[in-house]
Length: 158
Image (cartoon, rainbow, N blue to C red):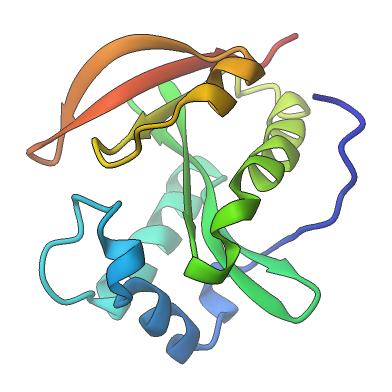
């Protein structure tokens, strides 16, 4: 995992122009992979919840940029006793998920509070080869927010 070129910038999610987030989250291609997105996207509630996680845990979701291009958002949030990695990309950035994840995991390796990372995949996400190549192992299904997800766990302590 080490040695990945740092080609993405992780920035303040609160600073993303609202129009970019609204366009991303209201795009049907994005929504099909977000079973917890029910109805219209509430931008203010979303930003408030994300700010609260940063205040509570000292870590949370970032805006992800490549130069001037907004690619989406993602990062780490504490769920019970494990850190969850989430990533929601714009349709134009769908092919960059693995590279972004690898860079984020390099960050996680430097954070002493993060020993393992879980990935919860919606049933619409069929391919899990990339997670397996990174060393994540499937641990079963979990219910979250009334939806079922496939759960994968990755030890990042090396």
